[in-house]
Length: 198
Image (cartoon, rainbow, N blue to C red):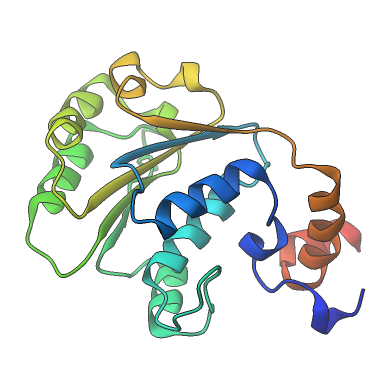
């Protein structure tokens, strides 16, 4: 397979992976749920999928199926500085997501803004009970243009009060034809995959 014919993004490389296609379809039809939970084993690609979905949502290129990776919005998301996206990560000193962090996110969600606002929680298992309670209001009465995406290895690691409000997608292994396209594509464009093949 020639390099110029390879997919340039993760979303292009995994086209045909049912779960990813379903999430993409929800976005394309403007019915992305207010609270999306994406689970799957460690290393299967949850964060790459989430990051590129965010880029696709805000990409300025107008490309339908994948982000361009070059526009101001895509670059801002790469740097973690897009004003309409918040990533709620674990505190470095405690390893948890605190109630204070969740309250600040909730306040941010209700502020007026132009366009969609997205919160990404890459490690849902690290939410404390207080953080979960702080997020419940925004999940029960979400602002119209606000969405939360939570990633976790297992749905059981998410408190039931959150899980019951989520639209859950579980990532299993991709079909063989997707893997055959994905591995050479990511080997050519993704530094982590390149290191594995050195």
